[in-house]
Image (cartoon, rainbow, N blue to C red; front, side, top):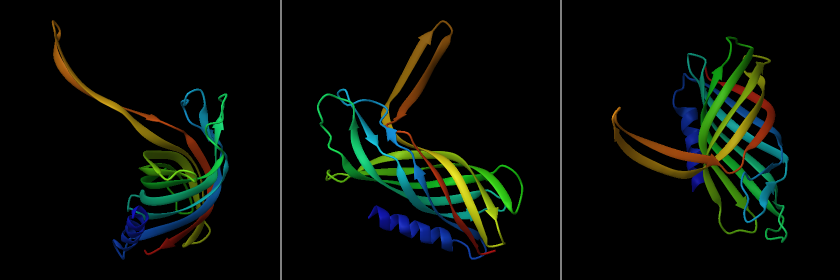
Length: 208
């Protein structure tokens, strides 16, 4: 169901305005190996490095900034790292990111466009031996560049940090003292695992 909703969102972005300039990016790349940031009874989980692929659809605004809907897929192996007893057997795992974000140009230009990016959305970790997918809120940040070989076709290279997050808790408190009184709230979040990817691909301009 989530994939169907995401596909429909892609279609909506592409049909919002016939006059809008849309960029379609298809890419492939590499994800280095990574480990969970905390241990489970003396061991951590490791995801081996490997290739990934993805697609993004961007709506370019008159300011040059772009709003992008993106999807990436990474197939790898999940392993136990450390520990005396082997509790987690090596197994295949699928990692997906569903993101909505902003690409901000770092300089003006029509042919060469360096940019910064920030996005948020969801991540999905699906070990083959488990019957349950693990969904997390996720944010991505990175830098990249687009170089257009013509008005319609170009190449795009980028590097990102991929950060699935978990909720640590929230608090609310008030205090009264000689210096005055006040109240405050706080929300804590952390990253279970920090991944990265380095990708390159083709970008196509559609529309005006």
